[in-house]
Length: 465
Image (tube, rainbow, N blue to C red):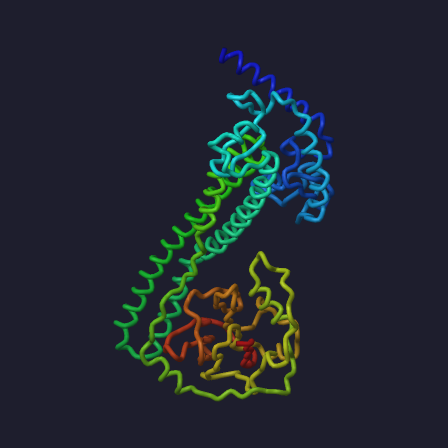
């Protein structure tokens, strides 16, 4: 008997699938999964697919996202077309369900009639007679089809939430992996910078220098291991998010009865998983005071005044800075034009020889740029962050986090954001420019072994606080 039942079940399912496919017009069949659309989306070339199918397919793609049918490059989805498609599909799905033979639906073993109702209290399926029994009479019951559609909508919402978290997780992996790759090089460069400052002060500070460099090396290794674990956790979470997304997709495609029986546990796991998404690590090295550094630098003190006659706004530079402020996922954020009160300023002095030190108060400004540029940039308006002959320190606010960069070339510096007074030191003959955190008497960064053969002019830009 069990074998006969299995054979009957097999043929019954075959007949249901055949009837289902015949009743659905081809324009409502996804060419990826060969099934009726689940949350359909139309891409730029005009072809239509299930959103989950397309997401999973493009997630696996190593090259540019393209249409699975015509291979046209498709950078983004057209969600307006998705809504139009759903209006056509939902009525068709309902009519198909109604045409399925009653033998294909789960039967009540007690009364030998079709189970048409869903009990909210114990999530069981009931026939009409069971719904009026003493055990269930006080419970709320709803038609299975109505409840199934409600849960499918919740499943689709959950899938979109999961996929959004997965994309955020992928973006975070990329951010931390980029830091991870350059971290050892950054620590080594910082050790060179710190080491270069001590010989300029006093010979008896050799012991402090050695301790400073040892602490920097140890802290650098500790942060390196934390970055490695951070990346590993996010990679693991990415796999879990994809797995739960696939489970939700499979659940959406199941028959109403099967879907309702498994939806509760899967939804709970989906909600819990989204509560524990690991966040990208924001590494920062400690900064230590260098004894005697400020006293030495103050012996080269000059007082830089601003030249208000130079009206160059450097729109290209401020736009470049704003692009640096935008995350990769929000490059289309509208930008406000630079206000006159926050336009760049140039120093009145130019330097062609000697050693010079001055300080700039950046206060609590969230975004600022200070440093030196080749004199010829004062008559141009096309300076960018990757332009040559600019020696700048930048503080950039990105998604409520502060990042420090120096340029050119554009290099990140993973230390605490300096506030208040920033010192700038130029040694023209030795080709050195250093930036100092005055409050901590510590080195922010420096340019070493540069060759200057042109006048240098101080550059200052402070954004709003």
